[in-house]
Image 1 (tube, rainbow, N blue to C red):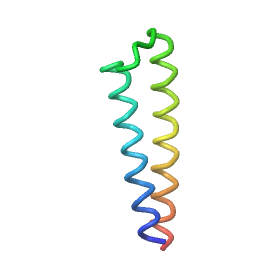
Image 2: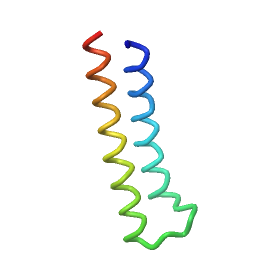
Image 3: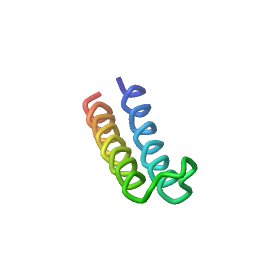
Image 4: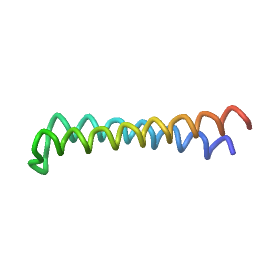
Length: 60
């Protein structure tokens, strides 16, 4: 269970990094509102996955 928690933490950090990359680099030429929506989605997903991984890691 420890390794599952660590993996989820790393996936959460990767989602946070992807959100920042997508909003600053904008490789898909999104409009500003579309880029903000994608960023918020990835940020929420990343934070949720990170804290679920942290919870699993602490319980094992």
